[in-house]
Length: 363
Ligand code: UD1
Image 1 (cartoon, rainbow, N blue to C red):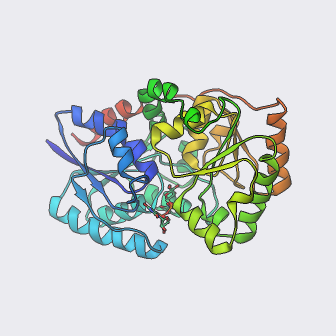
Image 2: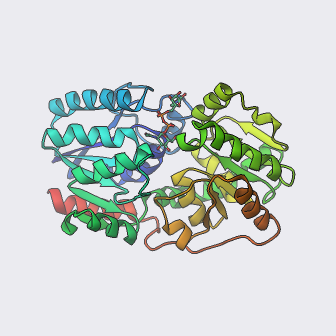
């Protein structure tokens, strides 16, 4: 029996490993151990996802908590190294692009433990984003690279990564939606918030480039003040955004029709995505989820590592300029919204394909 460590740390990781843990645990060839770094630790940033998506309790919880990029990365390397040395798994599986993903890959590679990276090959080509550094480093250290789009394979090829190690398997986040679609469709969270279906905007925003830079933060807020005059905006607020707004003295309640709420659970958030008129976000995952649900999405970033959501799906990159955001969103409110198609292999079967490859490669 082969020992596999699945290592997670932050909110988007939990959503991605739910279908993987289920598929791995069904396979008698593997002993699957779940490790949580503790990068996210609030109930609404972490535990609620385990409960709602029925993910088993982590076998190890490393309790690293928050800190600067360097501090957090170093703490995760230190703790995972200790654990990996003791447990000596045959493979670690990491997902996405958060600090936990990169830090645990560094620890494993120096102990000659094999690494599988799910969501490999995504590139924004913007190295001011911590996630881009995490992506490049994790991919360069990985032995099995699972991609969600053909464009990601091309990016890896450009970086000289051996084609033999790269597997186009589709998008695991879509497995989680497909597995929960009935619950998502019947949740109707908007009713609890006193809204009408298709008559509100869902907003999420937490990227350092948007909320840690005062001018950018203010430019987005000014756009929202215009948009709020036309339609209610619901904003489940990330702890980073809340902290930075207070630090900059930005009063989010000045936005008309703005409903600020706590971060939402997975099913609640997806229910809000599914029932919104459109979405404004800087999240990577929401660009993909909205593409699958075919809800128009406006991404308030200058670039995206997920161009397929724009090329094939319902996403539009609008940047952070006030006038551009307002013009694009108003066009949709006036009836000209962008809709799209579901990309290749975003079909709910990705976890199965990944486990087949792992089985073939390490047994
Ligand atoms: C991290 C990921 C980002 C991902 C996001 C999803 C990195 C580099 N970034 O960003 O890619 O989109 O998670 O949410 O890994 N905090 C709490 N409670 C928590 C967690 C965080 O209050 O449970 C606060 C802390 O003040 C912390 C701040 O949020 O300093 C930022 O948390 P951190 O994990 O460093 O990065 P995120 O911005 O959440």
